[in-house]
Image (cartoon, rainbow, N blue to C red; front, side, top):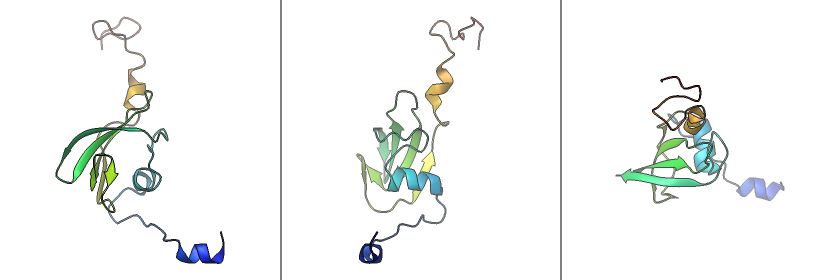
Length: 108
């Protein structure tokens, strides 16, 4: 990087109170912090916040973001919260479709 590009490149700093890993992944890099996917499904929204879910079929992590609406950031975020377990879809791999039992036929 040249001297002039370093001089005029604004460095983004994570605001106090936000998880720097979520901030870097979701706001700066625009990707899921769990799997790296850049595709998300937009979920319910209200006020300045919106729920999003990772579109990776093997991940499905969910987050609540603000200031965010219809897939667009409206300024620097002041809230980024996880609203699911990391990679929740991976936890379903051992569960069969029948009667809520697992692949061994045991009740959960």
